[in-house]
Image (cartoon, rainbow, N blue to C red; front, top):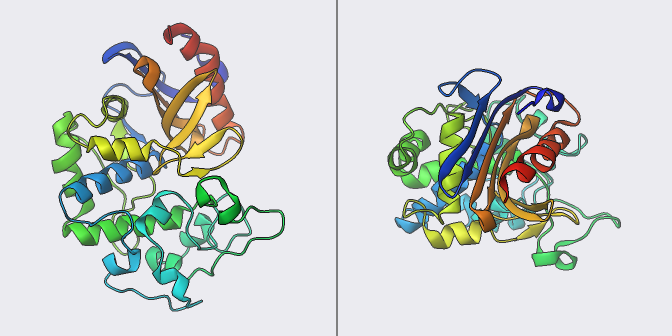
Length: 309
């Protein structure tokens, strides 16, 4: 399949009903570790589901500050911050003024990267306001107002790491990766040494495919089936075409409903439940303005016509 017109695509893998039907590399090979960028967030969501099943975390209504040992805001103290739950961070709908898609937002991730303590950065954010042109939670579908917030998922990961009592990479290796036959994974760290849970996890393309297949199989006894169902159910609306689950994106492409992981540059792991189709697209289309549109086109114009039947 010719992929040059879609920019710097590095791999394309397609699995149908559990069988690998297409594997193509344009950069590296099957052993190359890919920077998944924000696909990492979805993996952390899976780990939270496992932790809840094992009784290490009570449920998604657990206040985040309790898991962080009662960590407090130094700036913009507000009792509403104490009520922020895991579910608020899983659905990108907390009360924090945090929007990576707005360069003026106090919580934009580029500001977080300039400081040492990323969790304290999140805790110190002001409470979000709603101008007249923005939907308030009570006026939004599902009662939540979406705002893409990397700092929130960093905080969720730190809370999870503290709750499980061990480094997140060790927990991930034992409970998720090894059962899937994934033997290579590299996690980045924050400046203070916490696992960076919001982006940058390195996995091979085939490992990404295994994670997609896991979702297609309802968790396959590794991630609780109830958690996978809840994760891929809409909890917030992003726009007229796209909804959001628990760190999963939900949208139809050419009439085919997909649950998917996505990261900067148009990196994707798509799961199409109706046809048990899993698609992995890795790219280095970083700093390319239309990177996500390129991956959308590749999916709609080449992959789905060839394999959705």
